[in-house]
Image 1 (tube, rainbow, N blue to C red):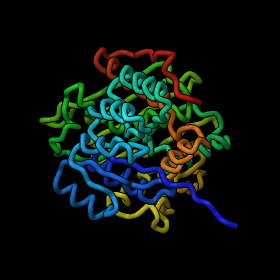
Image 2 (image 1 turned 135 degrees about the horizontal axis):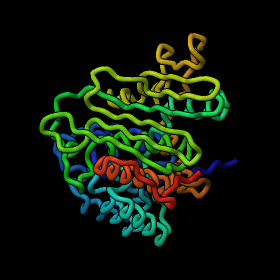
Image 3 (image 1 turned 135 degrees about the vertical axis):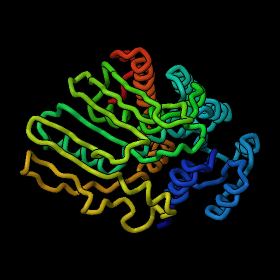
Length: 362
């Protein structure tokens, strides 16, 4: 009996900053069915780092050089600054390539809808890297909700807080609208997406988007409150000036609550250069497990294993035609609609309605 193996899909990665180097390249390189063919970066130090880490990939200094190799590629991963996401994804589609876009999908709902329409016209796959759908603690919350462990959910608190009192002077701290900087676009893209996945579409949004550090022009200490169509309220906190952080998740229900401290360990391991193939890569230490219960009567809940690789395994499956996209682009549009409503709410200091045609896929 002769076994046949499907050839891998060849991937071009645009950008080799933190997103490209730590969050995309390691998974592209280790996911069966994908081959990291080319990496784009104009930075000499990053070129050398990319060549060391991925010697089989071709390193090119510009996107135009990448398009010269378009006939050797199947998929483009856009991991460049936010302001370039829509334009580079559009160029990839014009070369009849499938596209993965790092979050945020685009800078506006209008841009995002145009991308989805362009992909449909060319019959190309487009999806969004919302890797924190595969955080172990988020997977644990999903499981507890499915099991009815907290009863009827009433309030969901989600935090992504850091202590970075000294600005870094990057585009992420810019107040220019085209840069899509600030924590609402950065961490908020994750927290909003997670809340919408858990509790469905948001009907109303209230936000406080503040700038705390001197020299920073984009929000660095923000709060977003969502009222979901099912009545659940999500309170989402993101900050670069939290000298002491709150719990990562606090889920309150009619029968019990689940509280979890500490971030999923996958990001820290990726920043340290660990391979996703390393034993225990997605495991959360027992000391970080959350608790489920009421008052003093609570028990530790083992954290589900984190699995960012599932995103790229899903990319392989959708390209082979055996599954839907791992993240539907309409979900990204729903997240951007909430971001736009949050920005209006903060500017006008009032609760904003979310358009009913911007709902996540359920």
